[in-house]
Image 1: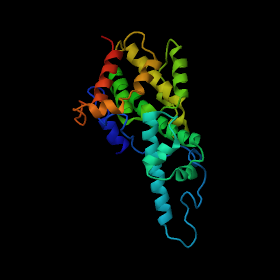
Image 2: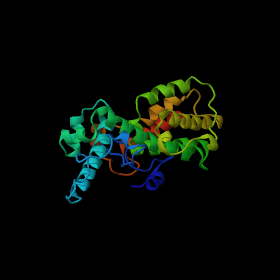
Image 3: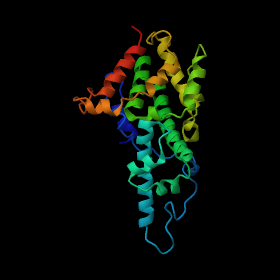
Image 4: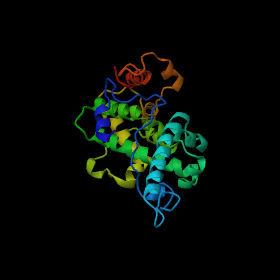
Length: 260
């Protein structure tokens, strides 16, 4: 699914798009910045084709990498970044040695996943902030896309610290579009993401559409919302757009944020 399709499936209210149940897997997103976010340059072990050999190894290595990244998003989204690499390998359908050949440590894999998710969320927040939607619709639409994609559950731990720091600042100035860096490694910095989110929050508050006392930290908690796997599996309405547990959870949280 492309970013355009996902953006169209994002919600203000009602929620559209994919379920945010913990079992859902965010779409693959391209690498951010240099290859060092993965595990260094090419080698015969991670996809380079030895001289005189057909291109099958490169294709297989690329397929394995995509499977590992997809599984890592699922595992870390469900269990957090403390989840073991063995579980990532199991869900990817490869040996744990294959995972470690591409990502020599879990920290390297975590950095790769977090950077890609933060970059995608930053692009979504920028689009919402500088789009034509009203203040509340911009904030709610961004949160809906983030939760439905699962990207919000993959924020790096430091994002919560940045959110708490921003919450201590009484006024958040909207970042002029000309001053907001775009693309590349800058988008993978969670501080930029949180600044854009803070601007969305400030605009909604200035419009009188945000409940009094709501901070950036509160919004980040909504951003990371997820429905436990057992709750989604037990709900008979799961699979019906707009009626799944993830949709209802997000609507409840948005209702709590909006001024009445």
